[in-house]
Figure 1 (cartoon, each protein chain N blue to C red):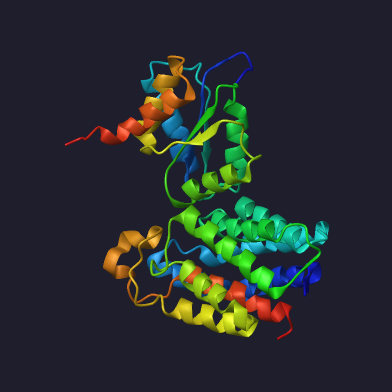
Figure 2: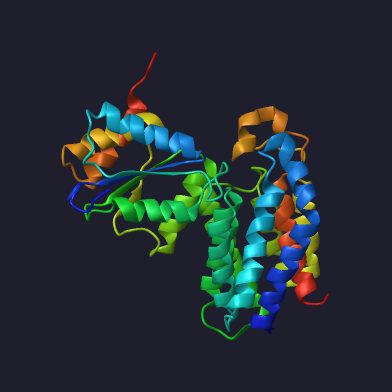
Length: 139
Length: 199
């Protein structure tokens, strides 16, 4: 991702236990957002060794890569993904300033976050849109 | 008084017992978890001892903070941020002192356990590492041997409980009848205190 892309847009990090899930959801969200390719989205899936799990290093690198100064929204799947992001936030200096763990369903929240970020919304609006995805019942 | 060397021995002794017990931890994690608790913790504590050999922090607090950071980085599962937070918060609570008293350590460890409860949202009785750590901290005033016994009892007492946190909670009643792997590894961490103290 070049430096001039997504200037001023909220960055989005997708943390899953699986590298494929994180990468696919990133692709899906950007595709469904109508080619919102300007939004910096980075997957952080699996461990550094390519196994199922969570890597603090991959998360920190992904967050740094999408930080354009407007904040970073982190969406996670389960268990260790949630706990690792919380632990990194508690460390204070591991993630860019104004990084937020967003409480949202992973796939639906990612789509809502990317669409909202593409419109130039701020971090609070991106977070609200992603969280709101919890209320869209399917049945 | 407990000096930096004591805390280094605590981490080394924990790493050694996690090595010895890795297969048992993973076996406990097979029916109710994702069968990686032993190998995950083994990877984490191996990284901790390697880092402590490379770097030699001079204070108890700095040793635990370094160890906690390593666990968060390398474990890959939920036990990484949980044990990492336990050690880091305990280390932070100890501050910059070159030596700490046992009472001070007990207080700091309680702060660490509280931080783990906040991070994971677990309370005693949820069939987690908290079920070994809370009794251990409660008993620490009576010494390391008492804390070890309390942690082991706490771990065994998780067997009839139904899991309410983590991967095991999806199993509902089927989690009953299995000793919790996290409480079991927590008992190893506490037992290593007696080794570090030569008791």
